[in-house]
Length: 115
Image (cartoon, rainbow, N blue to C red; front, side, top):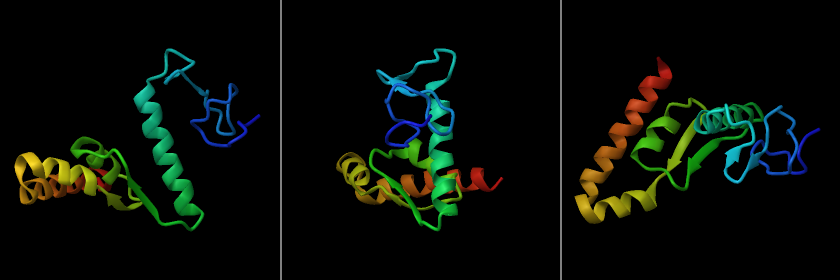
């Protein structure tokens, strides 16, 4: 039976509609599972389902150079919202350098996703 919210990351205490175990205290309740691989799977699956439903998929909030590169590798993602991170980085490295580094990370992700 699915969780009440229907979201794969629900902590409702039972497996959800996708057969994933719920998150408990920030970890999967199956210790053999790799938590971050599971999150990558959930994000990729959610993006694919949203696109299949006719939605345009955007991602943001908490993206940095590393996570933006990973997310940019998903073909379903059409826009990354990265402004807060870039402005924070610009304080230390300058805006042009921060934008160039982010563009390079997104390009690497897109290239890896297309391969």
